[in-house]
Amino acid sequence: MKDSAEPRHVEPHLKESSAMRDFVFGFGDGINTSLGIAAGVGGANVESGIIILAALVGMFTGAKAMAVQNYLAVKSQRELLNSEIDRENWEIENKPDLERKEIEDIYKEKGFAGKDLEMIVNKITSDKKVWLKTMLTEELNLNLEIAGHPLKSAFRMFGSFLLGGMLPIIPFLFGEGWSPLLIAIGISIISSFVVGAVKSRMANTNIIKGGIEMAGLGTGIALIGFGIGSELANLGIIDI
Image 1 (tube, rainbow, N blue to C red):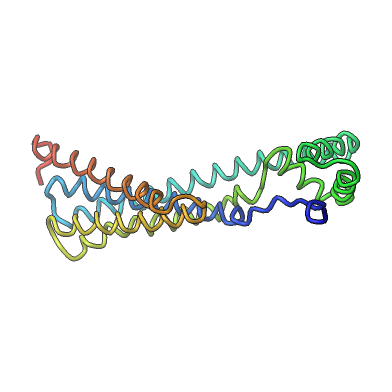
Image 2: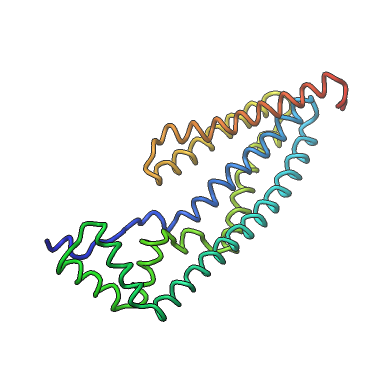
């Protein structure tokens, strides 16, 4: 059939996966870090100014650390992928018959045979860029775009961490006591739910489940921090 003559492995969402990955991880870590600190320090019954200061220090420190870690992780992944690309390039240049046979075997497993198989193999191996891309995606399941770019990923992580980290701090700029803490928890739950839902929507998974999962993690961290702060205050370790 005409449609089966040129099968294509199309996954358009992969082009944005690195950006979404950086945003989700950065935003989630940022909001959880700030909320955990705010709840922990707030649990010790200290004034809002100290809570804001502690959360800001934790937020910027965490953003810097996450950005550096993300840069190194993406850089290492790209170096690994590039080494595989260089190896495949060398094999295409120096062992074309063997690499052509691998293309043929790949499409045989997909159900192609006879003239259709021969036409596909000839089409792919006639263009070395297409040949290389096919070997990377079909044989090795590699895609350089998924990894992202180290500097871009680092800046995205830094920015999204700060964005998420600022949200739980805002209520403490306008109030003292329990009210800003409760508002911060509410803001964090809603924001985390939205980001989790968007992430799940892009991944074609359950939106509600994804939102609840991300929101629940942030709330759990806040409650742990609050419990620690309260217990330290009760023990007299923190007395401000």
